[in-house]
Amino acid sequence: MRGRDEETGEFLSPSRSQNRREALETLALGEKLVSLTEAQLAKLPVPEALLPHIRDCKRITSHVAHKRQLAFLAKQMRREDDAAMDALRDALDENGEAARREIAAMHRIEQWRERLLADGDSALAELLSEYPGADRQRLRQLARNTLEERKRNKPPHSFRELYRELRTVMLGANEADDDLEDNDEFSGDERD
Image 1 (cartoon, rainbow, N blue to C red):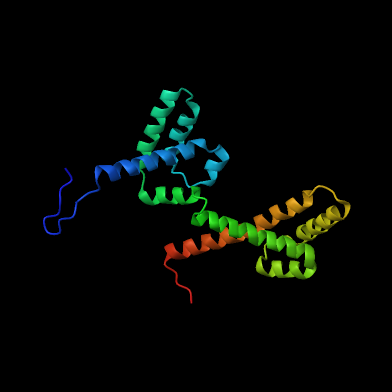
Image 2 (image 1 turned 30 degrees about the vertical axis):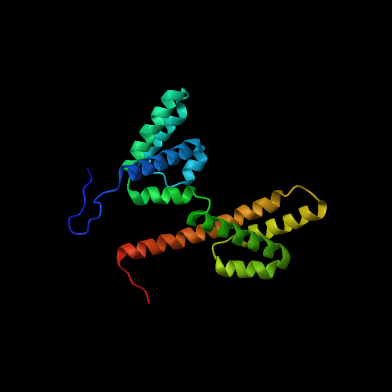
């Protein structure tokens, strides 16, 4: 029995139906995790304790045994911290905050690539002022090669390589900024 609060008359704990709905949601999340590849799992904030259970569930092919292992995985997931599971759900959710940030970053990178191809050295100078760690010569060479590819109707090898280079530069700078902010929060430093 879950009981009621004597003063307010409200129930003290969730109903059995609510507990069952939450357990089924966790089971569905476990099924999603099991269906992902190792590369996709590596990108998600999956708690280390769950990884062996996910791999075991992938390995088992017998229907009944797979279902039993999936139920065990869901049980282990319910034992995890709510914040960790919420972060995992958000990362898996196509409409989640993490997905929106990733798409926004991709669009920024594509815009810079197009600016480098259209504006040349002026866009490169602006990019280097914003990201001083970027390799000017490499970016200029990739932009020239991309323009040459377009002129000759060749496959977009340099076009893709330019995107990868910009992604490394831009996301590497953002991760470094995030690390500095995290260190400042923990060290107690306050900057004006």
